[in-house]
Length: 240
Image (cartoon, rainbow, N blue to C red; front, side, top):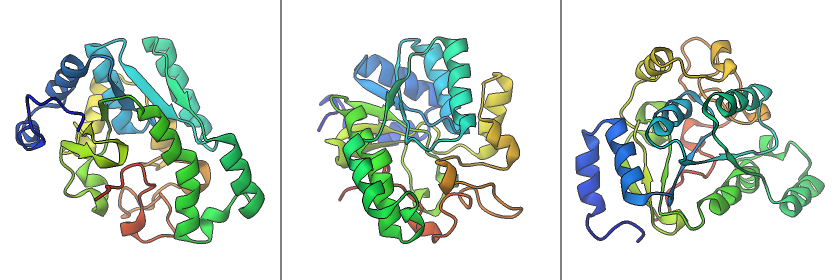
């Protein structure tokens, strides 16, 4: 297990459940120094964390998983952060050979055909690059929230990520509402993805993301052809 022997995960979960987001960010920066990372996909939650973390540690390590099929608006907000904050994002792309083999065997849109095919595509474009991004790290931070999906209702603010060598995974915004996320963005004038103003509460790859309709939940626009309980790409799947 990668966490310090001076505390247990049970203690962290208990302490962090009532801790503020900035308390958690300050703790991980002090505890792990350069051995932790923020995963940033430039959704609303991630830009909140990016702004907050860079105020605490301007040199914090931030990585981006560039699947090769991101929206142009995502690249644009990335550039706005680069210009305003001077952050040097570490960008991880899919393994070229694996991606070429997938496209040769199944074409560019196999993910529409079955859940297995969709997870295969996510595995190549997201999951494997994430493993490279987290290699050698002791902790990582995500923008996951309980309110986002039925698969996240029991999300703790601190957990052990067994899928990545038992490192610490922190979800400082787990108990935040969508309204609180946007309050932070507006109060702090944080750059955000223009797709949010076009009905996209959750943003992923171009062919797998659409705007939501009135009355739909926050994740309805992600893999909309699948049942809600299947809507995870594998980045946050727990290994038992």
